[in-house]
Image (cartoon, rainbow, N blue to C red):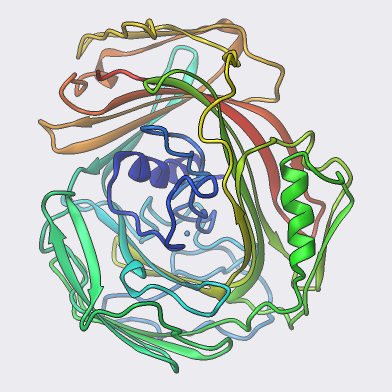
Amino acid sequence: MNRTTALLIPLLLASGLWACDEAGRSRTDAGGDTPADRGGLDGAVDVEVDGDSPEPEPDPGIDAGPDAAPLDAGGPDFGPPMDEVCNGDDDDFDGLIDEEVANICGGCGGLPPEGCQAWRFSLLQDPDGTLLPFRTVGLQAQVQGSSERQVEGADCRVLRLAEAPDPDGHLGIVNIDGSQAMLNLVPTFDAARGGFSYDNSPELGRVGLYMGGEVVDIRTGGGSQTGPFELSVTTPPVLEGVAEAALRDVLDAARGEGDDGPLSVSWQAERAQRRSRVRLFVGGSKPVYGATRLYRAIEYYQLDARLQDDGEVVLPPGFMGAGLPASSIWVYAVREGLRRLPVGPHAIEVVTGQRVELRESGAGEPPEGAEAPFQILAPDPNAPAFVAGEPLEVMWSPLPEGTGPLELVLSYRDPLAGEAVQIDCAVDDPAAGALTLPPEFTAGLTLEAFAQLTLRWGLTEAELAAPDSGVFSRAVSMILRLDR
């Protein structure tokens, strides 16, 4: 995974910024939002705030210039792979879009002074074939800068985002036309929450937008950063033949409540298509320690598998390990269509499909008398202290048995700069038990705004066999709020 892009969505969700909720649910329902395509903006469990379940995290193309490619020009279904170029397409046929060539927003070229925007059109329909219009368009981020820094004992990445976008930095009025409904989405800037909302005019409840295999047309009026554009996307055929009992077996195994495998999920196969894929997602979490709401631990797991559309995937025995009992969990399968649309340095992502899913809530509090999987020793969890602009020493106790890596994440709001900052450090030697963050990493810290330290330790990993791809991972985070 590209670690730069893996940072983006968790920070937004933790900071309460502008990511749209594609499933119409609370974050605590099932362990977090679905990640996007790993070639661009994707999700990873890095930051948790205020007792929410962790995000396992916050997913081509159109050129805004005169040499724009024909809309929805994807080429034939089959052909020789080519080197990846920044064009919003999967040139090398590896299931990733513009990996290693797009900027952090998924657009092309460097970041302008005003930063780059990452928008998401979440047109994934629920199992009943409907969606909520006001949850279809969202600004995931306005990135102000990203840089790498090696410090003694770690490789760090600093990500800076505008705490609130320009009130005129929307896409203009958005029209989305499907065979079942036409949406007229009007942007509103909410100064109180510092972000945009897109509401249909007139107001609509749940609607079915399209049937599988149909074309959806999108038009935007344009805003101050992205000009108007039009595009057509062909939605993938609905994934059919998935038995609820098969998803139930996967759910039970993830919770350690059923057979550990082999587990089979079957569906009606379709001819391979470049613009769609079959995904099997399993995400869950559970609070496992909580001295206070300001110092706690969450264990979580995730599988985000990209599958060959051959009609079956088999999870081998023991793939999910012992499971996590009483965890909140979300399991779904979908044949998904994904487009990323570079608009200069900015990007618009469009995802379509219709999920087959199961969700169950779990324990909201850690077990009584539970012990921490490990401890943060410094700053002192009972009275965390820091001095802005001075080194911050972080220490931890011996870690439980696991595979790693150990990631240290410092995330905070810098009210003077008007930015949200996330500093993610991959620790070279977890057994060292300490890492000192340099003064420049703490310059924007203040007791008057959100500040949080997270130590994330990988417990186990299991990888699907080719040609399917996906890793089932379990991890635990110790989370300490620094602002009190």
